[in-house]
Length: 465
Picture 1 (cartoon, rainbow, N blue to C red):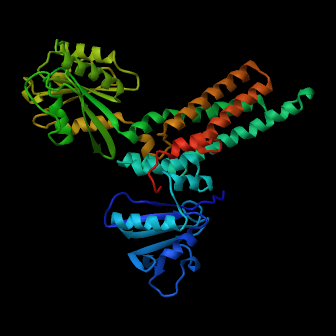
Picture 2 (spheres, rainbow, N blue to C red):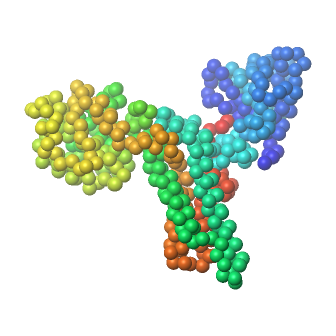
Picture 3 (spheres, helix red, strand yellow):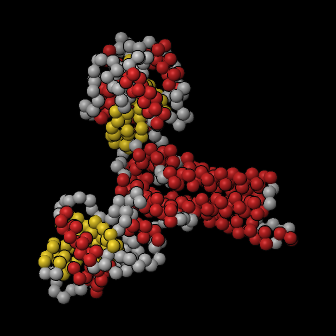
């Protein structure tokens, strides 16, 4: 796709030692050439080889603005697929703004958020899911979120979708061919083979869709709610996990009135720990608001850490477990954390746990948040709750809600195809549902798209990317 405008932007935020400005479009060289004077007399950048770097000065008529390095990229071998230049200058805000003014005076337009990546998509340098992964890569704050974004940007997800679409396209062409010969009552698409294909495709689509739960928490951080009655040590545990005095610790009950959140990266996974108000019966209006928010945080969390004391009666702990289980969804994990183990009357963990009624999927650990013992075991249990097998084996994991919604719609269409094959519905209705599946899969990679979809995606990018 040939775009008539040439765009420019500052690609690095704020001021620092260095800054980069990007220019892309058909008039890139005509715009940069008048304001760049090479240190080598007589050198003209439009005559230089692609993928080369040149030293010189940015000038405003006779005034030198800065010493710079200019990197040259020629279409189609650039990020955007267009002629492009990157100007590396000193990081002064004044220098950056002055160079931008000069570029705009020469005819460039200030780039909108994500416009460079949008041009890369429009010029076929990447598909839409890869373009979205660029934003995720920039925003990644942990090894896990980086791995998911990099995997998608390199086209792992796109390739899976392409295979699914190609297999369905073959059969839809045969089904639609039958429509052309409807009067002859011929069958080009073997129904048993089509049923097997649709079943296989649906399993793959559902597998990708189900990976969203893991992908989403890896992208935004695993929310972990620390809950329990007042003064059981929730704030002390939060401070121990964060290794800093983040929450106020007091012997006075009801000190925590609001949820306190902070994040920490553990073995490449970002965890968002939430210290909540203690759960108890109280007449304090403000404390009750905090307790209500505790239940909201339980609903929003992937892992619930129920904190109790080692001196608690087993009956009390079991009642607390039963009460919390009623609040949990199937996708949530419950960890029983027995605090103040250093004050327990018995010396063996087995004796403490023998009377506690845990379900098969639940884990328990003894700690002393104050003495910071057992914290490493608790961290190991937290990591066990996150299914990292897919990430370690580099299977495709989705983390984008738009992709999840499209896959969900595709799965529903495939379910209608399977039902239609069982009920032997007419070919035209069968074809319609298969076409629906192709449409939803095409929305993911951008083979089916609209200006509204593109606008919503790229408006959230940073300027210069």
